Image (cartoon, rainbow over all chains, first blue to last red; front, side):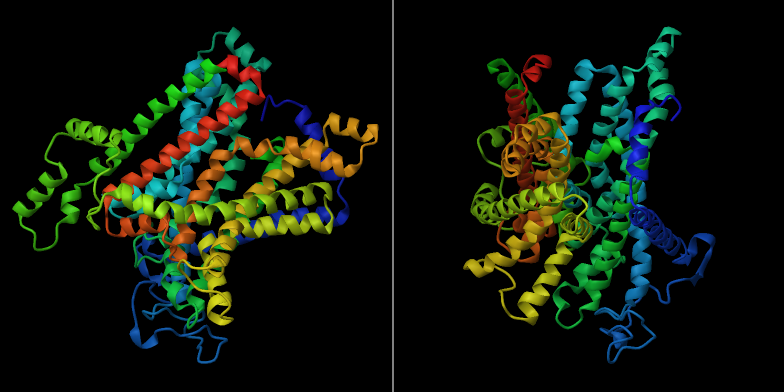
Length: 309
Length: 307
């Protein structure tokens, strides 16, 4: 953010201050509400239980998410007839508590997304800066691979891996990461191309900084803004991808309570037990929407040039 | 231009070989397919026999050579599960997939253009907000969940439409609608924002000064240029389409490539999964090639820049 060109600031200001009072409040809300929802879900995921502190019996979730209890099977949510407050959101066909599974499911969905974001942003940024700064054949080669990776559906990679390794948490993370670096590489390369022509890079070159130093000490700090924006925008996409993989049976293996698994569990029971599939669907929708809103807000605030991302 | 196309074609072939090697390795290096096919009662000799049958007893480079030779001859092996050549299975399922994807794609594209232009030309009105709301919802709700909810209301509750399978026109409505709804938001957002950029440009102002009717400015001058934007993300749209098709075919038990793929994964039928992945890889490379050539055609600078 040091050495940032001044005209992007000039273009940001009128956009925001030109809004009416009402529009400004709405804009603020599109930041506050997603932040609240995301923080709540992150807290819930962390405190689902305290096994990681050595206290497996202390938990936020009312029940164990995997333990079956056949007498309690297919109980509706508490407000429906025959529902009880023992199971607030009802139970599935194995008598597992839906609310507890939702809570532990948040942990799975978020940790997959977080891990994938860490891996892909690191790889993508590295390749993007290298392609943008070095140019020439390196760039042509890297961008060709990026284009191919972006057009390849991650579901297929996951399926290939599942066929050979079997489904697991690791397979999912690996499958999504294998292609997921491409959008970062594409965006960061574009930014690097722009930054490369700027005076501070020329000055660094004049004082004799090595290409490596220029790329990672001078250019990298200037791509952090777009990087944060795209990382936020990726949250939703990753949650949806993980859910789709689990739904198709190539994601997190059951009985683990992934949201996609839960939707799959209730798939053939929608007419008798609508609540099994409905609540995880809403949970996914909420998180994805929050991530997208927050990403859009960050982009409009930090870097409106990136509207096309 | 000719030289450019030849170079690109060569690069595509190289990329295809690379991807074939990658797929081949991914399937083999990470696990022993023979062990997965073995049942609890299989003896060591049984497993060895499976290995020999599949050619897995040979060295990896040797296996790759056999794989490539067969591939060039159009032989992608037999399905482990159905004991039939996988090319035949894919060939039988492909028309069904195309029958699903083409109408969905056409409807989604048409809807995206109409709604995207509507949003861009009536910025910040109730129309624009409606379009934005639809995009937000469509991008946040998982496609398979929307499909399940649609089945619940239209098939189970109101009994208007069949739940699954092939058949008459009524069998198409739900799958096509869900797939179109899955594809629409991304395209719509894209067309809306590129349309907004184009409408801000100098030549549109010029057209207005000349006094051209707004209708012609929007639908002829602006839209033509706004439609170039989706080209830049054609690859991503394609990936989304494949994902959507696999999900919709699974939910509606539509006998297309996506459905046999999911069945193949469940049965750990690696020749089948490998073949379908290769097919998609060929399509992906083909699309990238087409986009490149179209670009070079539109913008001559590219032709000379990086051949």
